[in-house]
Image 1 (cartoon, rainbow, N blue to C red):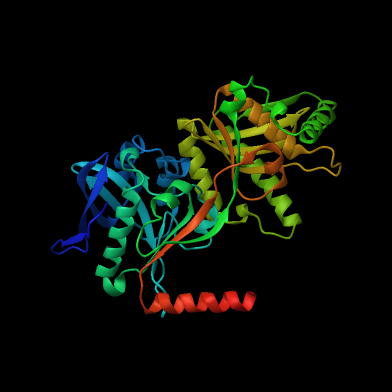
Image 2 (spheres, rainbow, N blue to C red; image 1 turned 135 degrees about the vertical axis):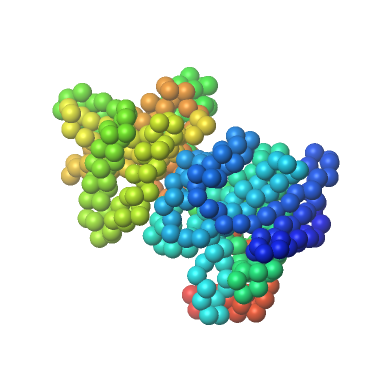
Length: 393
């Protein structure tokens, strides 16, 4: 339950505070939302990490990711902070889009609207929220953000975009007014390591006979060349070396397909060097090398967070012999490694790919959520969307 927000203007400041009533565990409590420049990442870190410890969030809302992102982006983000009494219970970083004539003014959650910066492809996006306020704090925050955009007039915004939003965020914002629009739902895939462990720990028994045969055949092929090994980078220097080797293989694959590849972006490379350097000591990132007879078969780049392994990128040494299946074998070996390590989930994340279907099972979809305040710009944009859909249809 929420009541209409009340804005309190601060003298000599563009900051405003919105107070709303929320119902949690049958009790009414007031939440206040304030807006200010995000500022240096280091100043925000203790507040973010404290709330993170009280939140059921993904790796992409951890300080390891958000802190690096704030350090690297060329933008002027806005920090939205929600408080219940003295406790911070909601945090989010929104980036205003560039103002263009007749365009709908937007803010994006943990994205910039710039193609190169957003090529990082955040997933399971959302607000960082105290688990006690999950399901209601999101709605109150978005309503307050819409009110703040209206208050700022020409310097404000009419649209809120949450890209790659997790399903709980979609559910929490279902009753926001104006009604959100969902775009581009993308299926995720994962391996439930905890369930496999409970069933006896045999991962290969959980996949199809055909995939199992392909993995075993590939293993025999590579073992004929020498020992088949999986090595995890032990320190920063080795991790950066694995990253460089992964980058070379990744780019060779994509340029051969006539595509530039993610690592062609200097921003993309710089961000991940930063993330590896800061995240490796926290056991938040993992660089893996699979080798046969000392020669690399593949490199995998994963994020580790609260029992989940988020597979992010790879560099595969593909071969003319399609029986080799280096990617399939490498993932199977990495899954077995994390099964033995005691992790709960190996998450392939979003995107359709044959190997994900073969090795995992469907997971929750991620979607783009758009909340748009009614106005002449939104009416024109809606008419243009309808026109384009009719043309395509």
